[in-house]
Amino acid sequence: MMMPRLKTHNLVSYLRNCFGPKTILLSYGPIGQESVQGKDKRYGYGSPVRIRFRTGETVRSAVISTLTPGPFGHEHMADRAQAILWDYESYGRLPRHVKALDVGAFTAGQELFSVSRAREFFVLNEWVEGTGYQTDLERLAKGYGLRPLDRQRMLALARYLARIHTQKRRDPDLYRRRLRELIGHGECIMGLTDSYPKRLGFITEELLREIEDSCNRWRWRLRGKTHRLSQVHGDFHPYNVLFRTRTDFSVLDRSRGEWGEPADDVTAMTMNYLLSSLIRYGRLQGPFEILFRGFWDAYLKTSGDQDVMSVAAPFFAFRGLVVASPVWYPNLTIAVRRSIFHFITNVLGATRFEPDRVNEYCR
Image (cartoon, rainbow, N blue to C red):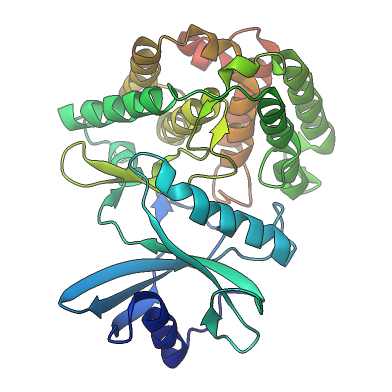
């Protein structure tokens, strides 16, 4: 079931049940798609709709989000319901994250309600103003110079991760589960490798299988590091960061687990600096090299976590498979995809990730 065509009377009824009988619906409509470096990021997990309504004298904005049926572990309604219910429960527990206001469902008749006759679930999130961080990277990719504000925002993001990662949890089984999910979750490594075509230039089934095998060997190498279990965002890429003035920002759409490996967050953001640079320059250089190295330096200095570079490899592999994917990024050149796959295989083959060796990894 796709996001239904919202019927005005059903939406009004739902809002009045949530926010009071005098609630007035002002407007609603889909949120537009965005682009990465001039390359369409075509695939998405849902169809968010922004709504504006009045409660008393207060005008409020919110977003209704669903998950789209399909691959990446979203085939069954129960799969999608699990993710939506987790979103509602966890969003408010992460600093700077947008708040979830309610969780509900659609019936077969497209009524909105809260929950036994459910046919598809949705989460209602607060609307937060801001501009996606990817617009900063797009500007740099067009050849504009690095501003002091670009450095300040990079530092703010790195230090934010270092702060949230200070929250630890002692749960060896959960840490190992998160490692299993890195390999086998529908949104992670095996879900991604299954989404690639049988052959895409140099990308063959054999190459993808070798990456899976190497990542599983890394899982066995890391499974004893259960003391590293930390509060995480889980999908910390530029599309999930909204900046307002200066370095004031909010984050969106944390994913898959409140607790996990800090390297997942650090690699998610820095992989996007590398992608932007490969598209623009064919290597890591210029403003993106400054941001990439600066992010790692600031994170290591603030967190004191030198071990993160010894565990980063399979998480970089995951993020590399995302940005090299013809499903997610259909317009990348073969040369850029080749550099990303060189990066993946070389990082997996090293015992420790070294930020100053990135261009060597990409060859």
